[in-house]
Length: 534
Picture 1 (cartoon, rainbow, N blue to C red):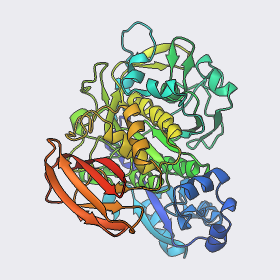
Picture 2 (cartoon, rainbow, N blue to C red):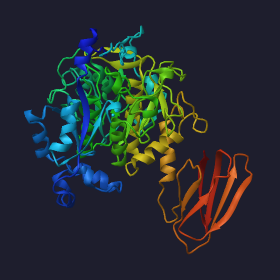
Picture 3 (cartoon, rainbow, N blue to C red):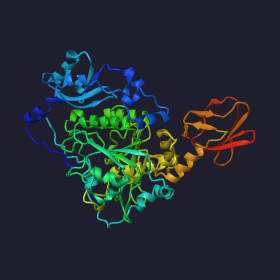
Picture 4 (cartoon, one colour):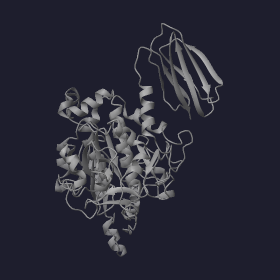
């Protein structure tokens, strides 16, 4: 994606940055208790059902921002412009002079604090030659074909053969634009089935996300999940339902896009979305003072990453592209502790050199897993099947596969689905900063999920798996003594103990990293688990 190139003398640069960007946080909301007591007034029934099924409480963050506060800030007298709002953070994103923004705290008693995008204020415009979609927009010289390799690589075709094609799973795609999705043939099946639900352009505040654009990035991304051309192209979740949200402003690069993204994530939550796919990443901005440092990318700091983590807390499975920056590292929100970030590999499953690498800056393993992102098949806005490069495409390939997996495991939580995907991956016990836990096998993920979710009278549960220090153990009854035995991969007994409490904890910190087998024996019933010790 091409950004506007700014070249000018020093005084021009100074004028450009006289305007500052900031988040303005409010200190209260209206009708919180009444809204929570009557959740249908603030959420759709689908959102309520998803939260109830996953044991997720409806809380103050679900209550909308007070619109009267926003109206007051929009008054010409304030000197600021409001671009976006966030109910999760009870905030708005504004632009104006430093003086005018700071004055909001004194002028309005409902304003709690201000957080400038330029962190030096919480104390010259430059050229933006970086094109975050440059790698992806370079078409690979390759004969037209179908998507068999990229689907088979993660074994999503095995799910499709069992009629798990994403039916009943709702996906929100947050991207830069979706030209011609409402008319082109690759999405005819999607439209005919009523699975193209709705869309909104958060940048221009417009319902039309299908207008022609010089950038068809979102159309290509959607095709890897929802595209279908008979005998030529099949996405990884052709029967899922989709909301399309435009959050990327292709004309500039500022942190307001993070605010748009969070706003779209909040709407996704309100609509009952199960999965968000976002093939966007943020680190470098036109104003260098806004650029995120490596320390900012710790999984919990940037605005968009904190929003993605809240979406995860709300029960949404957030799938992000790792980025195309190679050794320069992942951006936001791919660094998020709650998101599943997807690296890129080639058709043979080898690391693609442009794929952003994780680092020790992240609190959790990044990237998480990988899918084909080098010479991925996509459909452009002319309904032509082409090959493009980018983690922007490994992400939807994986997100669609996960939608099909979730259809097969409808009672699983988002955290459980992520665990099953990671556990099925090719280098689960030896993750690295290139492709994380490796390439998942979604049929194996389904098998793992079915095994762990088996429900009978003798139901045993162990979590988290993989375990680091403490392993939680649940047994169905304390009436009988339950014997737990743990063996290493060579069959050598590592531990044996009797359990009498229905819930207990086991300290595994002294166990060596690796794969173990756990067996429970209670009367005539037994259960076996594979345990991963990190």
